[in-house]
Length: 188
Picture 1: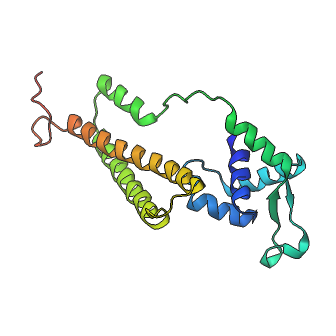
Picture 2: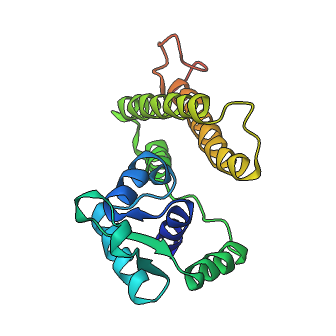
Picture 3: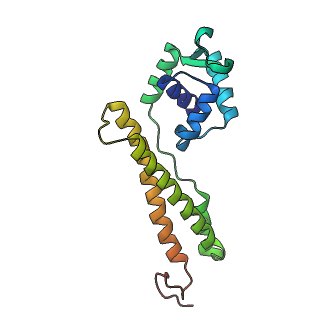
C-alpha cells in the first residue's frame, strides 16, 4: 500500500498535477518506489474519492487546464499513521542471485556477460546518484527535511556501491580458470 503514501508525500512536499507527479516520480521518488503514469493517475482518483486529497480550486489550476491536487487533513493523518506503523524488512528476492545458485548446479555458461551487464548498470546508477548528491545536497544544507531526504539518497548510493563490489567479486569467481581474473586454480 505504499504508492498512495508516496503520492501523499509528494503532494505534501508540493501540490501538483498528475503530470507533474509523474515527472517527479521519474526524477526522484521513482528511484526507490517506481510507478507507471497510469498507476499514479489511477491512485490520484482513489485518493480523491477517499477524501485524502482534493483538486485545488480552479483559480489556482496549473497552466493548460491540468488539475492540481493538495493533501487534505485526513490525508496528512493517514501518512502520519503510516510512517509510524511497524513493518518487517522484506526478504531479498532477486533473480540474478537465484541464477547464480542454479549456475552452481548446471554451469555458468553465458552468465558472465549478464553479470557484466548488471555491473555496468549499477555503476551507471551509482554515478547518477552521486551526481544528484553533488547537485542537490551541498554540505551547507542542514535542515532536518533535507537531511532525511539525503539519507534516502545515501541508502541508494550505498546499495549501488554494494552491488558494484559484489558483482565485481562474482565476475572474478565466474572467470574461466585460465583467465587472469580467476580467483583460484580449479581442478576436475
